[in-house]
Length: 71
Image 1: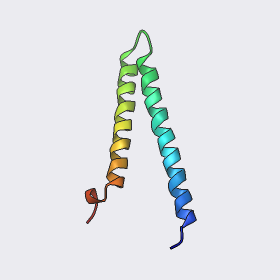
Image 2: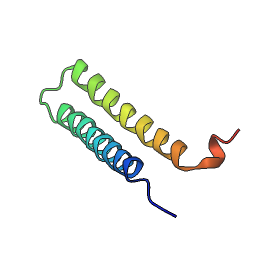
Image 3: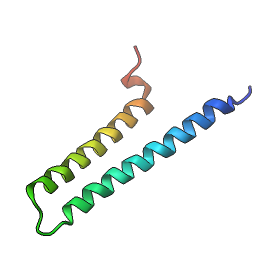
Image 4: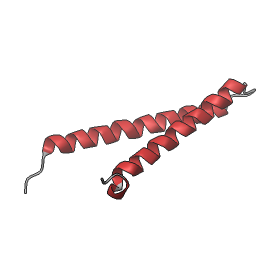
């Protein structure tokens, strides 16, 4: 049995980039909540960032658990 290094590197890079993106979006949401006085658009943007993070995490769970997408 041999390792497909191309696929391994692809998975590693996609994992690294997606984790970094989720952290950046979450940090943006936190930063928007820290604005004082906070306009309504900042609150909306913060909660939108948190929803994007939650959807990203749920999609990752969907990809990891084969019984969720086995046909």
